[in-house]
Length: 312
Length: 286
Image (tube, rainbow over all chains, first blue to last red):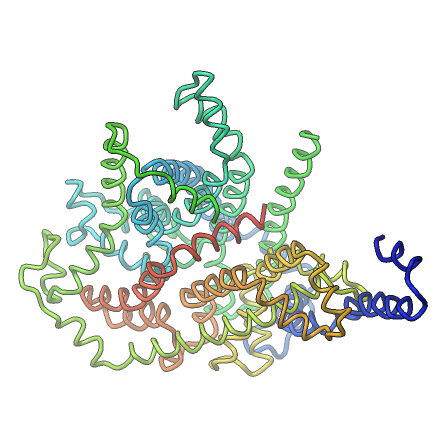
């Protein structure tokens, strides 16, 4: 806008200069394909291609060596939907998700409130609550495997109980849930903490002047303002929890747990692919899982959109 | 950041009764969080016999560096440490370069099919090795990269999430800065490297730190792509090789700490950047 206003008033020579400038300015943003090319090459090779290949393999009886596969149509999918082991594994992943997501969301919020309101040594609380998240999954799992081992483990010893955490069907998944809470709550905690720090102080001061006590301020200011971040925490946790694998296999010595009770969907898929060498079948399960994850992600986007429209 | 610094300039608060109670609760909760790490540390200084004693006890009765010495003597662990370092540094470097370029390309430049491609990349946010493990493995197999460094590194180098974060950031930079440079005759690449990249330093730091943590801690992908003990990374070697000897708890804890402590030390030093990074990464997804 300003450039065109100026061109009217300036002499011809300067006008050409401005014209070149406009051209240059526009050209600067043209033909950006080279910027995205390196990423797209990697993305195509390691995301898109595996996805397409997975779809293709899922219609074949391919084994791990990759040759001699023949087209068998929907047989893998038919088999998968009738495979009770698969449903069990999916059930375990879903059960884990159902237990972890609400616990982690509430715990992360409480920890963030605590760290936000204590005025001394903020960095120390942050460090303590977040440090476990920095451990590799296998290390965090080994630590808890040892804590939970009956007899030599400090968990039972400290609480004065004798629960067979890792060897009994009814406790094994709970043990994994407890380990996961400890290990991963730090990430959601930091998200909440950042959100809390972003709430303008004057809102609280105004409420205080109106005579609202700490409880009311939390319920009527903090919680509503944290709604978006809570949605994000829940969505990220659901997606991460459904993909349960690392800590479960390590805590169960790379087995499926007592009476197969902790075998997750990812673990069952990998077993089919790498232990039973049924790459075609494993690919079909991967595709089913991908669709499931996509549905969850799309549901969240849809929820976000309807909510935004609602507030407008 | 501004919020954090404003709390700092506030006059030091006094120890009101409320603050004392909160601090006590905080200390108790922190103790619960630190206890497993502390227990692992203490156990690593026990003898193997003492580590498996019933009933267990927190502190070693006889302190010994035997587990650490045994661990270092086998040589595997130093090998894994180097592998972890090589893989994580390569992944971080490649991700930074590739996603900064792509983020800028999507945010600021025009080319045919941009919006379609952007949509495809967003859809890629849902795909991980956990979801597509088996087909990803067969792809890497086709490329002849099973049991190689590249096979471990490259599949970790196409993170749609990082591109998305930087894309969001670049969109927020005022266009006028670049336009002024274009008018002065600077080329696109020069503008990118001398104006855009320096402005993006905090975001790039966040992306870099995150990628490093994720890659250092990645277990699933290296686990799938190699079972050669010479190529394994820390998390991987500790979980598979050390467990297969029959578990020696003191050594296992010492190994775990060697794998885990470097990042905790890094966190202590870069706490502000990491916290900002988490906030940034997470909030970008909102």
